[in-house]
Length: 87
Image (cartoon, rainbow, N blue to C red; front, side, top):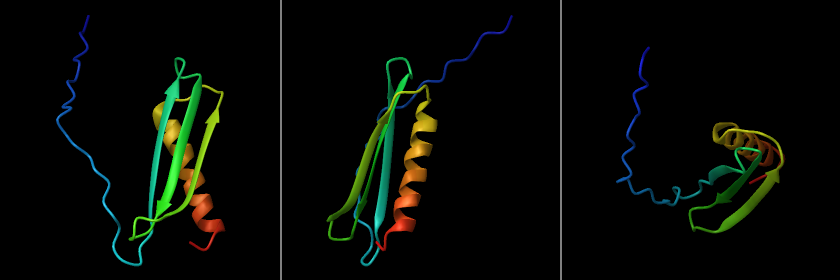
């Protein structure tokens, strides 16, 4: 019988948001799951180089999903928003 090697995660990293270059719009997506992955939610936002919020969207769905799936759904929705608007 094999033992599973548990990976240790280094939590010493600090992530900060940085402004995009001038005349560039930046999109950020984040997602999470709740209640043993039976509820998922995501949020996406678009900001310009002046740190102005241009557009945001969030949604919660009651179906089973992993965080990767939830973030993928958020990313797809972001792409749809970018394509449907003239940001």
